[in-house]
View 1 (cartoon, rainbow, N blue to C red):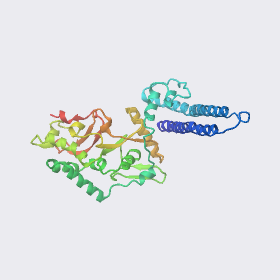
View 2: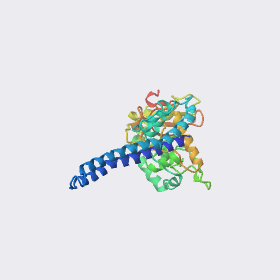
View 3: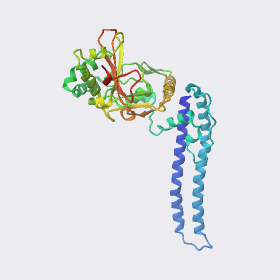
View 4: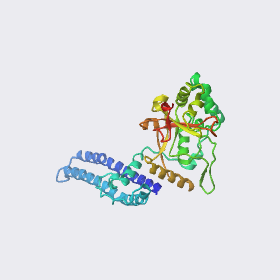
Length: 370
């Protein structure tokens, strides 16, 4: 249902664009014709040039009005279908029933057809990114390369050189430790298209998880990704959050192991930290990636994820992504850093870290650690 809603809305947007383009051309075309007619010199009894110019001008205005009226007529079946689908989706969002469609004037915009509340909010969210969103089919994702051995060697060297000397050894030990995939999935060497392929087609940018288009056209993937994919735009941006953690840990004799032990329960096996952009020294532009369109609420993110799963199971991509910099979009942006250990008393290992637009509910702020 979610895929159909977005597809129908995009069809309406395309209709509007074509109508607006045709309507925008009409005045110029009419002006050219009336300008040519105005230069004609004939006796009034032969041809009333002034009257003809006025008639052509009036015809142009009428054509423009007719175009906009026909747009309203053409999109009405789409609007009705979208409304019906939203009605089926509404219970999943805690809405019992939708109000009826709102009668809209020919010059009203698309959103004005839908009743305020859930329906209009859902439509607004999808329309907000209709002009900036991106799409990628599985066949295109197949052609997106994964980094070669030489690519990764160069990428790792750049990361090592980006660390301040005081943190280089410990930082590289964490990043290259067993089970850590921060660099492989969120490093600055990952291309924009690879991040889009990860988001829309679940193709692992590192190439570690299985991914293939099977004979039935279904996309088979061993990779997982939420409704956001992205990472850091430079080696220096990537190492700054880790340096901030190492700086905080450096005040303790036991270093980072002591820092994490002191801020977790004795039997805890994981801890997630939020390092604010301010503490990490990050700014907008230090992160980039994509987020799913129409994903501003938890329920809408679930809809988007389900639509992606449905599409890939049928060999197509039924969702879209929009360019996204969480450091620029959030009110309290930063970096989510995850550490895990196998059992109580075992050493903590870095698992991953990536930019976020706000702290997750289960994270601890680095500056609040005791």
